[in-house]
Length: 217
Length: 217
DNA sequence: GTCTATATACAGATAGAC
DNA sequence: GTCTATCTGTATATAGAC
Image (cartoon, rainbow over all chains, first blue to last red; front, side, top):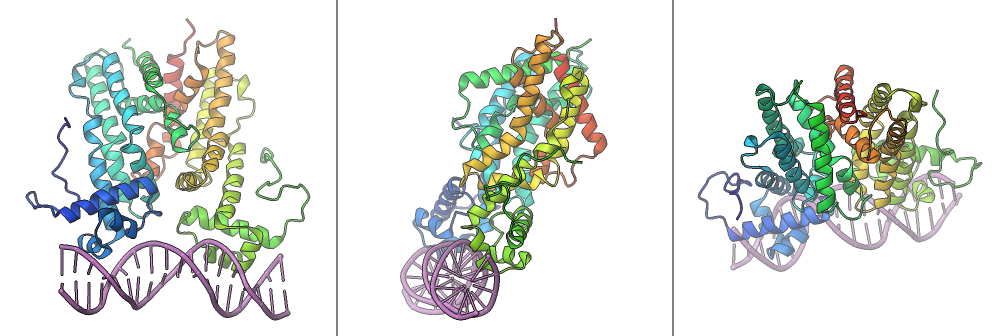
């Protein structure tokens, strides 16, 4: 499985063929757990060291600071959002199917164990490290909006839809897919995320809405 | 001006006619500044006391803990979102105008100095105090979605629009109004929030989209 | 690189005089 | 209620031996 990840783990090591110290890997794994489960402020370097089964000094020998470690984690996980988002060859599908495929994948991603805690961490840290916000946006919602806008532009040129502002329409569609269910999850208004049936329903409704608004005349 | 606030400041004091100690008020004001400007974790009780020009012990004589003080602030500011949201008598307007008025007010609120920092603080604290998430949702986006859903239901009954699922459509509209511009602001992808012209454009586009999708047959 | 032990700092919260 | 002074815990980060 796995669609092959964007890069051979460019967390911090730049080169391609570094043996990848096992302790370093253990630190990264432990840090990902702690940061994403407990949140940035509650995460302590002691806890990370304990879970990685190394000493705190070892952690600092691999990462300059807590912030640096956090950035490595966040950048890596942001790249990991790409495979679950990509709907291969959706560009060939007719609008109704293409929009549904793209919308459903996005919804699933946003409620996933990957994106949800990542989003929280990024929001908490974006004041200190604005780059993290960019990384999340451009590997997630922004990426999707761009791909979808490209698709809509093509459909417009082919005369199948009428989309004078593809990027705006793409973002409207994504907003309509989420409606407020993701917000409710974020704000702990809902206990459980929407199930399969509800997600289908939300996405189908968004597809209908956007198709109604983009009929070629 | 001001449409009269929900309650006579029920921050923590329950009764109606308490003299309202000036030091207590100073603490609340200072805490609001510090929490909302610097963020919850960066805010220290020392800084709050210094800005309120009282001692830290005085702060603790009025509020049991940092969390309690934070909750008082957040609840108060959440209620303060209500007046700027309410579009008086929009229920009497025809769909195009009603949707525009509601959408524009919501967009302005979400980018305001009131809601933006509040949203950040709530997101950061919702793990520890889930009630804060509810408070924000129900005084902001949730409230608007409900009012709009009521309006749409009425329009459907009057035969002017076809809205089989008013709540869903209301949320789709709100999502389309935001498109991704608020997300970009949150994630520090955009430096400046959208200006007046852009906001109008976004809202008008969302109105067109939803009206196209709800034409009575 | 890796460990144990520790420096350093600052936070939230309180004691006790007035 | 209000102050000054302080307790106590815990966090990031480092020194120094191996």
